[in-house]
Amino acid sequence: MAKFRDADGRIEQLGLLHPERVIVELRAGRPVYTILDGRGGRSEHGTSDVLHVRAPLSIDGLTGLSPIRSCRTALGLAGNLAEHANEFFAAGGRPDGILKTGGGSQDALKALRETWHQTRQKNKGRGIAVVSGEVSFEAITGPLDDLQFVQQRAMSTQEVCRVFRIPPWMVGASSGDSLTYSNTESQALAFVTFSLRPWLVTIEQAITADSDLCRGSLYVEFLLDALLRADSKTRADVYALALDAERGWMTRREVRRLENLEPEGTA
Image (cartoon, rainbow, N blue to C red):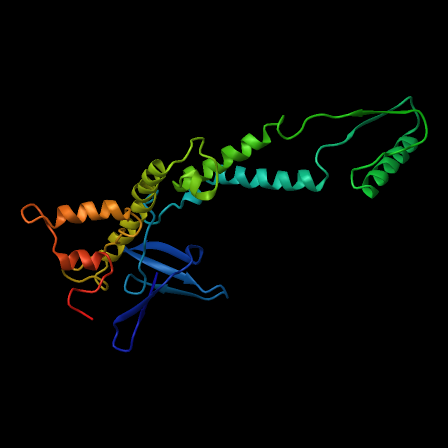
C-alpha cells in the first residue's frame, strides 16, 4: 500500500498498489520497492512510502506467495473444465452419431457429410435428416454424466474453496452435508477463525510494525464482533453474566456501547 502524506508530512491516506506493478528487492538489508505506473514509467521507494503486507506463505521471505500462484494447477483445471464445457455445448454437445455407407469415393463421402451437417444446422439439431443413397445411422451415447463431467466440476469447485479456505456453501456449492442453523453457525465461526483470521493477523502485524503508522504502544486490531454476533437470547445471557455483581467484567455503559445504544440518560 502506498502512503499518502499531507503538507506537514503526516500520513493521511493509504492506497492499494497492484502486486503485479510492484517489484521488491533487498538492497543493503533494506527492501526497495519499484513501482510501475503502467505507461512505462517506474519509480523507487522505501518503507517510508510503501507499506508491504506480505502473504503468510513465502518462499524467499521477502515476497508473499498468493493462493492463486501456489495452487495454479487446481485453478487452471477449473478454468479448463469451464472452457471445455463452453466448447462442448457450443458445438452442439457430443456428435449425433455415425453415418455408415456401403462404399463410395472420398468426394461422395464428403458431400454426404456436408449434406447431413447442413440439415442438422438448419434444424438446430432437431428434426429428421434425409439423405440419398444406402446410408445407415448409428447413434453415439456418452452424455456428460457418463463422462463424470458433473463430478469433475463439483470437485473443481471444492478444490477452489479449499485453496482459499472458504466453506463450499458460501459460494453456492454442495458440501455433501445437510446444513442446519447450528452447524451453519459453527461453520461461519470456522470461516472467521481459519479463513479470515490468518490474513487479518498478517495485516494487523504489518501495520502495527510500521513506525509511521503506529508509534509507541499503539497497535491495530480488527474487531470481528459483527461477524461473530450471536442471536439476541445468547447475547442477553452473556451480558447477564458480564453484569453480575460479583463475577461480572463489564458495566451497563459498555454493554450499551456494544449494542450500538446511546448512553443512559441521553436524549
